[in-house]
Each structure stands twice: as structure tokens, then as C-alpha cells.
Image 1 (cartoon, rainbow, N blue to C red):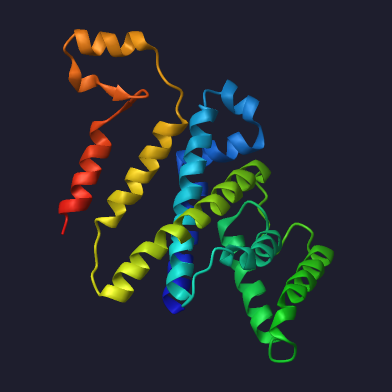
Image 2 (tube, one colour):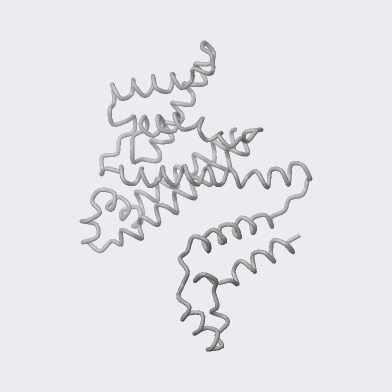
Length: 247
């Protein structure tokens, strides 16, 4: 529990520094405030959005791994339990600030756990909504207000990446948990199968290239550029071999 709290605090501080103290953070905030104006000033907004998805994926992956490690039982619907406190924590903390999200999460979590001393634990969602209602009445912008800009767009991209990646990595964590927990063998090769599955999904979902492309590679003798559905085949082969021979 303390390890998860320490990791969350470190991540919040690091993301706060990136968001407010770096050029990337300024570009992110500019894109969130006014994408058109940011594009005119020379900011590649599409690339910034990709960066946001990447950062959101990393944060989601980390949280998914932490929650799967902390809980003794992993179920396919375990993520639904955190939806209500998650939204409540983001709004209570103040939209657009990672430190505010951390403070909001602490307030929501501590209040909910303390309330179980007087009420049935199944009523904790009602406590979350009560805290949210009180904060919205007293401080509509949250307990940690960000004055420099509106981060609704940033929050949207982050939440989408968070929910998607939390589910993906929760499923992924089941494999190592069973492998290591029930056999006592720590096999890092399972990560290669994870990447191989992702690569296979990318191949299946990609549109097929023209036949002229294959003819150019084959008749030209340039087999190093041969690909399946437009994607290089050597990468999944290397992944599969590494997964088999890593241990």
C-alpha cells in the first residue's frame, strides 16, 4: 500500500514538472487551450496529441500494474469499481493539474475509508458523491485550481488512454501473476508474447497494400523490405524467438 502511494506521489510530481516546467508541457497546454492558435504558432498539434496518448498510456499502465499487484484477486470487471472515485478525485482536485488529482484522490480515498467505520462499505460511492457535491458548492473549480488555461481537452485524452490502457495491462498482468505466483518462475519472455500479440493486431487491422509493392520487393531481390500487409515481418519473428529462448 505504501509502495503504491509513493509511486503515485512520484509520478504526480514528475508529471507536474513536465507539464509546467518544460517546452513539451507548454506545447501541451497551448494545444489544450486553443489548438488552432497553437498550430499557427508552429506547434505540431497532432504530434502533441500523440505524446498525450503516450503519456496517458504510461500512466494507465503503471496504475493498472499497481492495482493488480495490490489486490489479491483480479477480475475482468475490477476496473469498474474505480470509475466513480476516479472522476470524483479529478473534479475535486481541479481539472488540469496532476498535483490536484493526487490531492483529490487522497481526499476521496481517506474520506471513503473513514466513513466505513460508521456505514456499510457498499455505500462508499455515496460518500464520494457527497464529497464531490460539497467541494462543487464551496470551490467549483476544485481544491487545487490551475489559473493558466483550460485542460478539458487534455483531460479527455488522458482519461481515454487511462481507461483503455488500465484494462489492457490488467489483463496482461494476469499472465505473469499466474506464471510467477503458481510456478515460482519469473519469465520476462512473456513480455515478448505481449508485444507479439500487439504486432499481430496491428497487422490484422492494417489495410492490405497493393500487389505491385510485393512484386517490386520480390523481383528486385530486396527481401529485407518484404512485409506482411505493409508491416515488416522480421520484428515479430525476433520477438517470438526471444520469448522462446529468453529462459
